[in-house]
Amino acid sequence: MPNASRFTDRTEAGEQLGKVLREREIDVDIVLAIPRGGLPLGRAVADMLDVPLDIVVASKIGAPGNPEYAIGAVASDGSVWRNERAFRGTGSDEEYFEQEREKEAENARQKAERYRGERSEPDLDGKTVAVVDDGVATGSTVRACLEMLRQTDADRIVLAVPVGPPDTVRELRELADEVICLETPSNFMGVGQFYERFDQVSDEEAMAYLESPS
Picture (cartoon, one colour):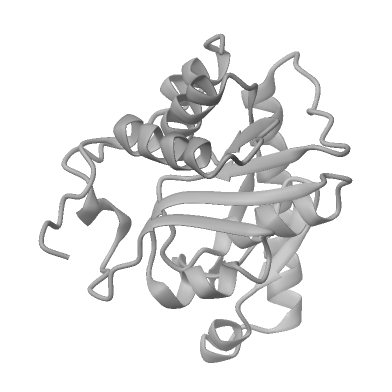
């Protein structure tokens, strides 16, 4: 990939995703963004396709003594994904994982409630759902979110992200009906390297994207 910075910012990346979804004539009914970084993209996609925007939330489950290293993730409904290799390699045991799963599931539930406010969860029955994030690395939270959506009556689940490593993207194709990833560079080091601007998105900013009318 000649240019490390493939995208100006999250909104521009979302516009590119929306363009591809439209060009492929994927009849999306609703966009579900993964907070917080996915919401600027989700808003851009939802506006381009003129469909509602909502969220799907998951929390990472960190390794013992190294919470930043994900050994899995759990969605707001309790759906869980575990990286078995990381789980074994970090000396985790079932008791630890279950404790962390319960804690992070509650965190995910609270986050979803805080973001939605008075709004109810969207009805996905029979709908084509586009799941949007600002990129994937290991894909822990995305996998938990997809596991959650597979338990619903959604007709079709499309994952749309700007960038991710080839191995992760290939594995995610097993969880979604379709995966759109604009860039799958072999030199992937982190999502942020592919953006000119990749500032952290605050809760307040993320919720403002969610509340903006489509």
